[in-house]
Amino acid sequence: MTTAFILVALALIVIYAGPTLLFICVGYADYMMERRRHLLALKHAVRRRSDKF
Image 1: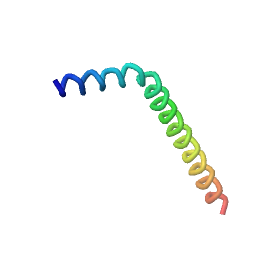
Image 2 (image 1 turned 90 degrees about the vertical axis):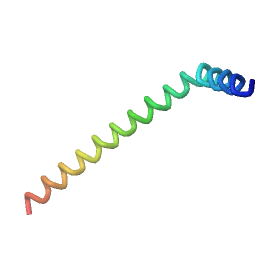
Image 3 (image 1 turned 45 degrees about the vertical axis):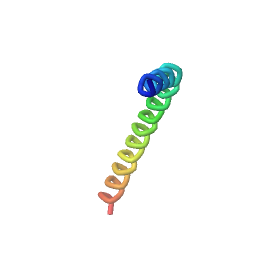
Image 4 (image 1 turned 180 degrees about the vertical axis):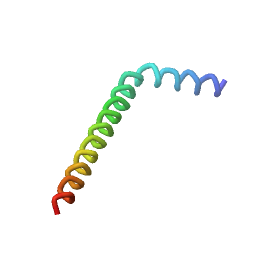
């Protein structure tokens, strides 16, 4: 009985929080890609600047 209650509660949480969790995951992935692009641009600029000296 307790196991069924827990499973039903988890299913309801996943159903109602699904879109929110999806938005969080997509937002985090977008943030990480933007951060990676920024770090690559910074690395490229540092490399280009060190070539001048």
